[in-house]
Structures are given as structure tokens and as C-alpha cells.
Length: 74
Image (cartoon, rainbow, N blue to C red; front, side, top):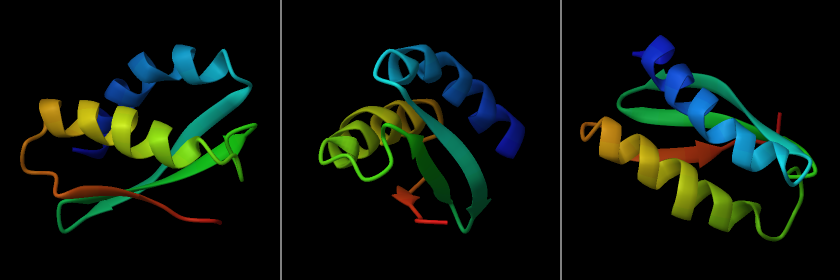
């Protein structure tokens, strides 16, 4: 599943790159995806919107079994 989620992130990345940021997949465990926001997204006030309104929504559409996408700091 991790590779499939990485493929979905690869489709999302061009939009994130436009704002000088990126997202790294940290892991998938118990149907929870863990990511790290990097570049301009790290610490950005809008990164929570990008994460929940964009990344999480798209991943859940592709993988209904995913419960949540969460961000870690490191």
C-alpha cells in the first residue's frame, strides 16, 4: 500500500511544488498515513489546509480504508 500511496502523492506534488513545498511519505500503519511537510510547507499556516483539504481528501478517495493522514515534525 505504501507504494500506491506514494504514487498518489506523486500526482499531487506538482501543485505543492508551485508553492515551494513538498510532502514526504513517512509510513502507513493501522490505516493511518503519516507524512512530513517540507520546504515552504513546513511551518506554513496553510499547510494544515493543504494536508486535510487536499492530500487527505485525495488519499481517502483512492483508499477508503485510510482513516486519517497526519503530519509529523521530523
